[in-house]
Length: 190
Image 1 (tube, rainbow, N blue to C red):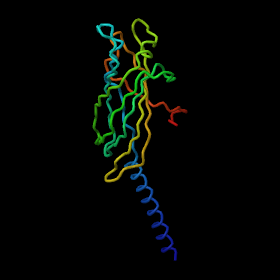
Image 2: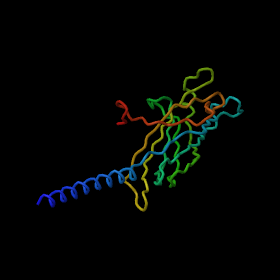
Image 3: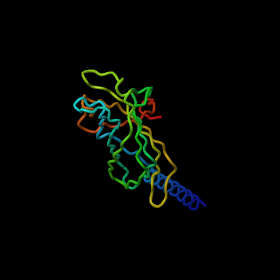
Image 4: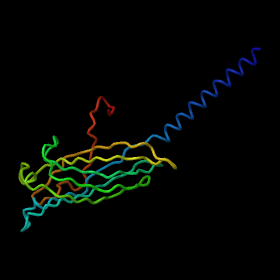
């Protein structure tokens, strides 16, 4: 009798251990990470003091979106970018929209966007030595493609300050990384 009890217990323990390992590997293969977003170029011609006609109401920007997932593609809805005078988003300077697209795993995409700027708000942003700071807010929804199926939609909302010089171009040479605006508690993101 004791032999069969030990065999049953051993079988049960190995089943639970195998089930635990399977759950761990499934979790590791199905978890996703959000894309990295940055602003590569930013140009507001209405602030360019070197132009003869500063009444150009366009805003041109280039977004860089990077999929860091090894085995998962990302399907983006329309990417909406709002540029405002401050992080409080009191006055909108311009809205830019980039049409939705699919991005394969471990791929980078650069997307150009153009919007119409509100010259009154743009000129009212306080200037320090010709430098002006705008808040850029990016929002979209994404679905992750895992093998042959898509996950539910996940909302992404990121933002950053962009400093623009007297020629209407962003000051930073490198891309400005857009960061999540979710409140943080300890080391965990809410």
